Length: 114
Image 1: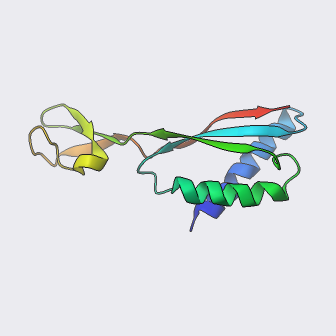
Image 2: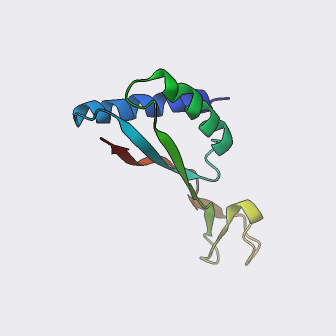
Image 3: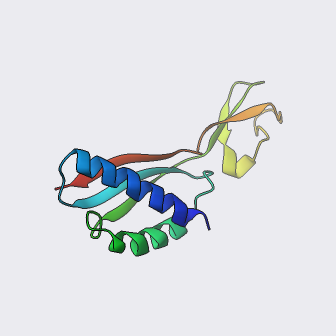
């Protein structure tokens, strides 16, 4: 489960931002998480709920996850399609000359604090 390591990294980044901005507490952290990012949202949330209790700045912080759909693009017919539903094969023309346009992101979008 690499989600715990990911959570520690998020906590470090958010703590640094909080200190830079003289925050006394963080109420929420919003993440954008691609559906094929290899991070499992439920595991991430469980790890978050455990780890933030061990910090001063984030002990009450809620983790908000905004999912990003996985979309691929076909280089042959120039169409976009749902990656999870179709894999690497274009449903329009059957080509495998495709690439992932979005869906593997993992970004801190917003930090709300006081």
